[in-house]
Length: 575
Ligand code: DGT
Ligand code: CA
Ligand code: CA
Ligand code: ZN
Image (cartoon, rainbow, N blue to C red; front, side):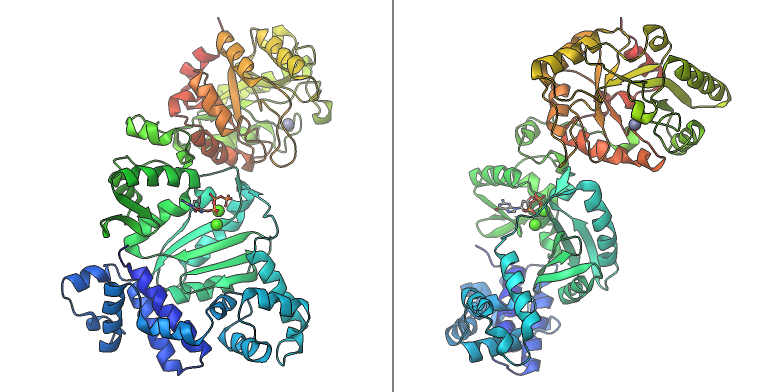
């Protein structure tokens, strides 16, 4: 393996850690830390500089002595001085320093007083209540140590949180980090970047001038409940919401490789690495290497290019065929928020919505949409004051009147019609016939057998006015399982009849899910991405629908509400 700048930085930091344990002179310690920082944030590879006989001692904070040590590391892969330090002090002590609450001074005390050299010994001593007896430690520290050890073991299963909750936590934190002095790039990678519907933990990458500043500020963030570990280039904290955040500082030259690595998914990374191996390349979070020489790393595009692939969007990186499709050059041109021309499900104060019809329309207009379907519930959904034919007719009158006044915008006459247990629809045909779009869904009798449930919905689609089957599986993420349904048969039936399926964009629904959306696409069924808005701000849920749609490989043309009204109208007319 070639020696990267980050490797050198790591060795220097390790030396500094050991020197701290030995309570060496503070200036010496700082010199190593500074050198680590300088090398770690350099935009060029130190190995290359040495190869070209450049004078390293011209770098800030690097004297002749340190320059010699860097050369030693590049040439031998290690540092003799570090080996000697490791001989003098048990290396387990360094591990102890990764435990929150334990700095070098305390680790030395634990080592001297209780002979603790390893994490196991630390845990034993804490459980036997020996630590609280040492001066300056106390019960609270002991408890913190036990908790930190448990977290490090990954003892407690991390709860996954919904993407919307992750967004609420992540956005202000990213903003906070962007404001730290010397920070250049800040990005959330991992499942968050892939727009998975739930997120296990957050993986943030930073490029900057001084990593120590970032780490200091990060652990000081007001929402931090506990610092799990704090290092020079990597720290982990638990926020008050029990959400874990890892921040890693990466070198500019490795930014693309690190972003690719930490975006994942793991399965995608493994598949890419396999392609690389066939070309005698090594891919890791520092870059792509050929015979120990860096050939890429600065951007994700470069990383993909080394394995002869085009850039692959994060939402596709699940190893669900994206690599093969990329090789054939037939990756989908994924839909974006800008492609959306309207919303095909929304509710008003006529039923359980919080805003009037006019207010909802105004909000949709302000979003730049061309149309909005008002889909208040039908009478069977009495808990939402569902409309019968008479009240719906009243609403349609209001819609017509408003439509006359509106320019460049159309309110679509619609309804979210309940599919009753026998498959009939909850409103008479003569009123369905008057609607621009008929959205159908089920709200009761979730527990029917798979056969009966499937039959119910297909009978519903037999009605010639049935257009869109809304929130098809009824799942609520983390709360309610989908009802038992033969989705493949439903899709076949929809295809035959010219019906469509919804991707409900409510962040706790995302129904259809990514995999089913892709299935529908492969069967040639178009999808409506609808927010099911009950308030004005719910209209912004469209972004979650778009995320899920992208994960399901959808292109603009696979989606109903990217179409102009005139084209959409044709699609909605069943023959
Ligand atoms: P999460 O946090 O459970 O919602 O899902 P991710 O995908 O964010 O996973 P996480 O946080 O464990 O790791 C972040 C990324 O780091 C992951 O997507 C891919 C990469 N990664 C983690 N562990 C490995 C590994 O063992 N091998 C490879 N190739 N990549 C890994
Ligand atoms: Ca993660
Ligand atoms: Ca992680
Ligand atoms: Zn509703």
